[in-house]
Length: 600
Ligand code: ATP
Ligand code: MG
Image (cartoon, rainbow, N blue to C red; front, side):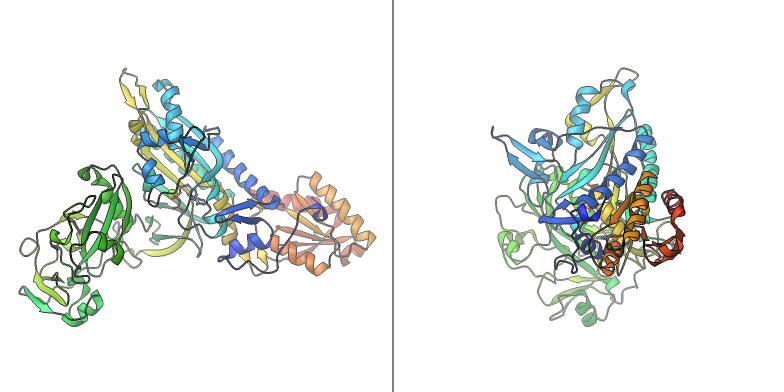
């Protein structure tokens, strides 16, 4: 392709709303344009990158025996009602775009496709003889994200590869899951990414085991905790660890003590001269279930520990049935405004005890009249602890479960932190890294097949729900993640395998007939040899062309400059800036070799 004929516009400055390097660079280098919040146009250079990533994804998927298809983006609400996800995905913080069609039917734009694929499987899969089966697609997904940001990293319209597998039993699912693990590692390696596979929370998709693939980068929205021995790595949402041992309590008798202005753990510990590990902290949450019911929750946890809200939400989802609900719509720490909606009297905030009386909850329609009380494992074994007195400016000390306070329901909702000891080997200390989630594989089990009645007839003639897995790759996010991992002060450095072009020929002076002639010959020769080549034939200063070539990140730059007199051109490797003079006649074979080696 000739730059003179391309829509080629680069920007000197990054737009103000682009916060991270990869987003700035893709905008500046003319790969993407923002059309609306979280909605981007993929311009021709970007589309080539996306096609290359897609091709690698397809090759690895096809190699496992999975089959490509294309499912509708427009999906009927009924299917989502059958699975029980319509409300969670459309109400409160739900991320599904929904609409009414001309027949007044509710529809949505697919954020994911478990419902559609399960409906198809329900109709077409009858017998164990048809299993296992794995269908996948590459498609634009729609998600009305709460915080779309960082360009393609968190878009509201983005490209995903999603695959769904069907099995007669768990063993078969596990086999495909392992195949996907391998296929994903291959994909990300071939795309030139440095990544880590981590244990993950299964979130709203549901199911049992799941693993995420994280591209390691400082701008990553996810935190990964891992150990040096390589035996443990998990998303912080899922991670477990051993908390530090508590320091024995200095309190020996139970008493209520005045502690004015100590609404934080730090202030309270200073006033009581105790360590946070001797404190039971009581945190108030409010959960809204899908039947509209609000339940107030008190979570008691050791004072030095924090609550992992993903784990808490999972615990609350498990209890949905108790409240005649199916799932959790929203979980939050109620602010003054929301407290006013249910509190019968002002709450002793900062001084709450595990037994805060239910009379604080006003009798209201839609509000459960009693607190759900939970205690994290870290607080269960504490003796003679300090905690709130349910009265502003007072705490109690020397308290014990089973004496002053009944022990609430025991749960694990503690947030694991960097510096904690690992569970598998306490001599290993958890380290932290930032990651960009580019892939996620799930063992779904029978969640969807059961809810939607997708069954098959087993070998012995019994009818059973299909066992399912699902596997996603964020294709557009992955492409930007590659930039986030590989750039310098001059611009993007694409991994060769996914670069839009392999090489760019720069003619420093288009007024020089020899420079133009050699460039034209090389341009034809390289493309002929399968080296995807750009020709910068624009009537621009040489400096501008070099800057643009660096900015757009093409792996090899060929300059038909001064050394032409010796029958040579300058070849510069973008990543290392290493430059060498190569005889014109050897350029194609040299580059062919480099590109082949780099792509592997
Ligand atoms: P996240 O936790 O980042 O919101 P998710 O866990 O909801 O993502 P999945 O449902 O697992 O996402 O989707 C599969 C893949 O699609 C993710 O691993 C990610 O790479 C990509 N992806 C998800 N949401 C977005 C988005 N808003 N923009 C771009 N890519 C996305
Ligand atoms: Mg995910």
